[in-house]
Structures are given as structure tokens and as C-alpha cells.
Image (cartoon, rainbow, N blue to C red):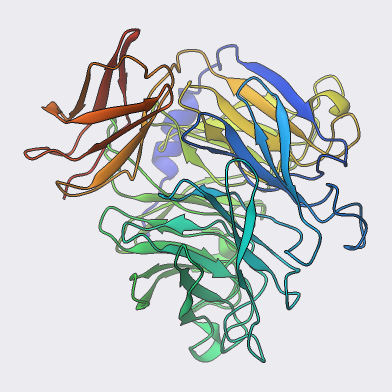
Length: 482
């Protein structure tokens, strides 16, 4: 492990005053339309945002609380529509964010309920028709896993990949793949090594790197005890443990990672960190309340920051995202001025700047205690949820704008060889006159004001994807061409 103390001290001395931002509460859940949003939001090709609530909805009290959770749609301006209320039989208590697959449907998971009571995988159309694709614990002893809390990803081969917190051959959780039609294959069973040295209990989802491999974390297990790991796994299921936490005295390198990693794009920064992964731990570090770390694809880990137990940005960080300015943005669950959560920005080799502390004029307005990270819409604005607070203490949806961050385009996927089909998401794409991959022109179709379809053109190299529109040229953060 390399030390980052010198860099931290340097950037601490250069800590900047954050410019004025704008926080807007878009919707306050009331129970009937959902309660306790725990997962992050996702932007779909139609320009709307989609998410889930852990509880609430019109599913009745079969779940032992008001409602079993919902799937909802929200416009960027804040108009909310409940698309589906879970009733237990079709799943209950969804924790995770959704993902839009290449067929246009949203895919997600519930942590419980379903035919056997141990959770489901589902698909739902943008108009709200839900289909249960798989019921976990379909076999005695749950060798197929149970209790998933993680978001799915769609890999470049078209299959969806995810993790379960428990179940599997050793009851340590699993990595699985599932086709869009619902055929599930267990790829790896955690706790396959003595003492669960390979990790146990993955709570976070996976990320597919530009090398085609999948990367993730476990909250428990590892070579040093029950402190968690970072792992790499092939799409076929061969797993390598890259790092076991609590390798330093007092677990100063962090412990118990419970959020999805993010692989950095290629920014104009020094030192370069293109291709490395960034993530957070829930505990460990100097104050024992979480860290931010960087890890290379080969497993060299650097602890970049230890979150403080008191003050800003506070303890218990959620998942990070990389913004369109190549800096990282995130939330803490109980930090900030009033210990009700905070939004922060972080240069990968700097100290975090706290941009917003929740409940500045009462939690009934802003919400509080976000349990998930942010997402950045292609309009440049960040969106997120407060899991509690709001008018009925059932949580809120909010937007958060940062000066200088304007519209951009995002590609799905973010890497691909020549000929790979690519969807470009954006704002105001109608009338686009050109699409280029690092300067190489591509043939494209404007599907709507928020979507363009294209493919990687011959001669393309790694770099920005740019779309010329009547209102100016929009750029992506970067696209990798192997």
C-alpha cells in the first residue's frame, strides 16, 4: 500500500471555499407513494429518472409495515409517478438502484418476498408493467443465493450480473448472472476458502471495467478477519481477491466496504489515475467511521481520506460517482453541520469540500440521512434522495446544482470495440448534426431529444464522444476503444 499523507496535507493547505450551489427538494414521499428511498436514481433513455423505495406504496400491510416498497418515475423538474407497488408476492423491500437494459426495460431486485420469501429479480417497462424474472432460494438451502441488496449491471455480453448478501453453497453470498429472460447462473460462492478468506456478504453491486472483467467488494471475510475485500471476477466466474481490509494496525486502511466501486475516466489531472477504482468503506480509518480509497486493477490500495466522526463531511460515506468535471461526489449518512448527512466533492488526491449539510432549516424541508449516493443527469444537475425527513418523514427526492457543471452526454456502454452498438444519452439532442468518437465521425440516428443510437466507427480511438447540437457541442467524459 502506498501512503497518501503528503498529498492530503498538500491539498488540505489548498482547500477551497465551495462556490454557491442550489439544493431543491423535488418531492416529499408520503407513504402512499412510497417511503424510505434507499437506492440511487438512474436516468433512462426518455430523459426521466427512476428509482425505488424500500417501503410504502399501495401494497397494503402484508409486509408488516405500511407497504412493501415501490418503483417510481420522476421528471427532472420533480413530477413523481408511482409505477408499481410491491405486494410481497412479487417481492418486497427493494434496496438497490435500477438499471436500464439494452431492451429498454428497467431491471432491479427486491431483498425479500417473492415465491420463496428471499427476494426477486424483476424487469419493469417504463410504463410500469412488472415481470418477476427470478425468485431466489428456488432450491432447498438457497444454493442460488438470497437477500440481494445490490444493483444489477448489464455487461457487454448482454447478461445482467449481481450479488446476493447470503445464501449460496457456503451461506456467504454469491455472484450471479441472469439473462434478460430470467435464466440465472451462480458464478461464485463466497466463503469457499477457510475462514472466508475470499470474502463474504457482498452488499454492493459490480462494475465492469474496460478490460471486460468485473470488480466488487464484500463487507465481510478476507485474509485478516471479518473486515471485507475487493475482488475481481471474470464473466465466467473465476474470482481473485485483490485486497483484504484491515491490513494495517487499527484498520486505518478501512474495513467493511459496502458500496459499488467506480472506475475513473481519463481526466486532465496530475497525477493520472485513469483506470483505477475508487470506493468507500463503512467503517475503519482514523476515526473508525469510514474511508475513501483508490485501488489499481492489480490490487495496490491507497487510503486517500479517513472520514471524521464529527463535523463535515462526517461519518459513514455512501457510494461515489465521478462527475462530468472528473471530480468525485458523494454523500454521508450522518455527517454535516447537524449530523443529518452531507454532500461532498473530492478531487482524487485532495481533501473533500462539504457542499451541503442536510436540514439547514428543518428536515421536513430537505430530508435527511441519505443512504445512497448521487447521480448526475446529462443536464449537469445532480439528483439524489434523503431516506428520511420530508413532510411525512418518509424521505425526499432532491436536485443539487453546482456552478460550472453544464449539460453533457453519456454513453452506454462506456467502452467498446469498433462496431459496438452505443446509446448516447443527453439533453436537447434533437437536430444533432454530427457524432464523433475522439474526432472520428460516426453514423447515427436521433431517436429523441434525449437519445441517439450509433456504433463505434472504424478508426475510432479512445477519447471523448462529442455531439454537435443546435445549442452547442456536448461531450462525454471519455470512451475506451480497446
